[in-house]
Image (cartoon, rainbow, N blue to C red):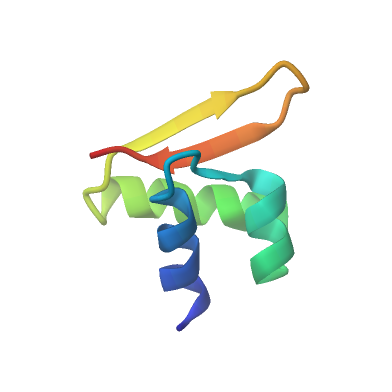
Length: 64
């Protein structure tokens, strides 16, 4: 699978995917991940839920 499909699959998991997890899998920089996520949301029509936990980790999740 290509990286884009892999990232989308990760974000579709129940707990979503953290920015760090996506960076580790793709070897992308944070700004690249953020750009990709915004494109998936705007052009891909997916509903992206973005949240931060107490430790300040960003998590992206594709909602139903």
